[in-house]
Amino acid sequence: MEKKKVGVSTFFLCFILCAFIIFGPFYFMNRKNSKNIEEKDQPFKGVITMWDYPHLDSKSGTRYGWMLGKIKKFEREHPGVYIELKAINLKTGPFKIETAIKTKTYPDIAPVASDYSIVHQKLLEPVDPYLSKKELSDYKPQALSAVQMDGKTWGFPCMMSTYTLFLNLDLFHEKGVNPPKGGNWTYDEFVKTLKKLTYDEDGDEKIDVYGFNSFIGVNDYNTWGILLSDGAKIVDRRRRYQFNNKKAVKGLKKLVNLKLKYKVTPDNFGENSEKEAWESFYKEKKVAVYPTGTWAVNALNKLKNKGEGFEFDVVNYPTGERKEPIAICKNTAAYGIFKQKDEKKLKMCVEFLKFISQEKFQKELNRLGTFPVKKSVGEIYKEDPYMSKIEKSLVYTKNIPKHSYWSAIEDILQSQIRQVLLQKKTVEDALRDAEKKITSYNEIAEKMIK
Image (tube, rainbow, N blue to C red; front, side, top):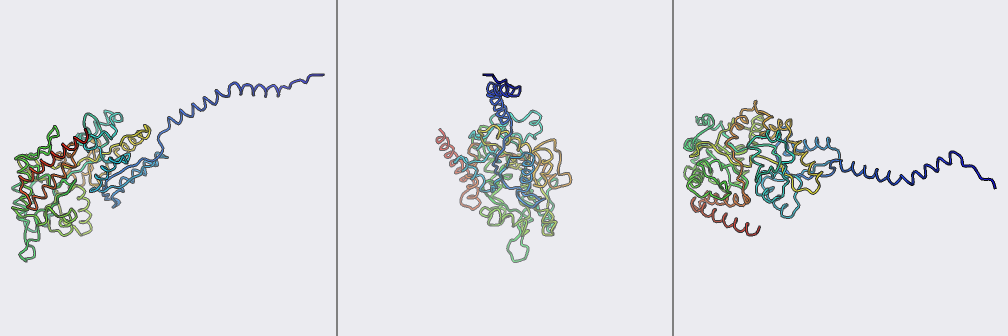
C-alpha cells in the first residue's frame, strides 16, 4: 500500500500544535502574572466616605459648596474614585463621631486630626510617611502643632480660625464712645466702655441696649478669652486638670461680673441660646460688643452690602494679668484618616487630603472666612481690613487642650459656669464642684480602659 506524503502546510500546523501544547501553559501563566502585576499597580477605585462640618461659602452662599467643588475636581482627575460627603452639625457632630467610634461605623475621613480625645484611642493613621520635610516645613507652626501628638503627625491641617470681639460701631458713635486704640484694651477699660454702651434707648426706664452679650455652650469658646485672661490654664503640660486656683477664680469672676455686678449684659445671659445671642447683635442691633468666630466677617459684610447691617470692627479680648490677649478654640481644622485595611485606599485618602490643601485652594479660603495653614500661600486678606487684623492676632490663639477626656471636662466646666451666671452657685463652689466631677470622671474612665 502506498504511503501518503505529508504536505508542508500539514507539517507546519502539526508543529504549531505541538509548540502550543508544550509552551502554552507557560504563556498563559506569564500573562496571568502580568495581569496580576498590572492590577496591583493600579490605584484605588471605589468610594471614600468623608464627614465634615459646615463652612459658609460667601461665593456660593452654601455651607458645603467649597468642599463639594474640590470633591468634584478630584473625582474628575481620578476616574473611578468617589468621595461621599456626609454633612455633620457643629453642635451634634462631635457626638455623632463619638457614637460612630463606639459602634465602629466611622467614615474614612473626618475633621478629627487635632482632637486628642480621638487621637489617643489609636484609631487614626499616622501620616508622617506621606509628608516630606519640605511639606512639613511649609505648615505654620500653630497648624502643625495641632496635629502632632505623641511624636507623630495625625492628619492634614486645612484651615485656621479664631474667636475675636466684634463691635457695632454705630452704637459706639451714637454714644460718643471710642473703640479701643489699636484693638487692645485692659479689662478695666473694657468694663468702662461697656457701661457707657448699656442704656435705655426709648425712655421707658428699662435698659434695652447692652454693652455685651454672649452664650454658654458645649464646643463654644466665645467667652474663654475672658476666663483665661489672668493666666489660668485648664490642664497643665502633664494633662492634669488645674482650673481651680486663684487665677481661675479671678478669670471666672471677670466673666460673671459682667452680668451680676456691672449689669452690662441682658438678664438671660447664661441661659440664652447661640441663636438668641447672635440675633441680639446682628439683627436687633441691641448689643455693642459680641464675641464670635471669624465667619461673622463675611456674614456682617453681606448684611451691610444689602443695607441691613451696620458699621463694625474687630478687636482683641481684654487683657488681665497675662498682659496679652488670648483666645482658645479648635483653631485648626484638620482631617484625619481612620484606620484602613486597604493600603491603596489609604494612599488615595492621603492624595485627596493633599489635593484639597494645595496652595491654589488655600488662596480661596477667604470665601470661608478662614486662614491658610501654609506659609507659602502668603496673605490672602490684603484687601480686607477686618480679616487682615484678625490674622495678625492669630498668634494669641491657643488650640483646645490635648486631653483624652476633653469633651467631658469642657461639658462639666461649661455647666458649672452656667450655674454661677444663674446665681445658683458661687464662683468658688462651682470651680470646686467642677474639679470633683472631672477628677471622678477621669478615674472612672481610666478604670474602664484598664
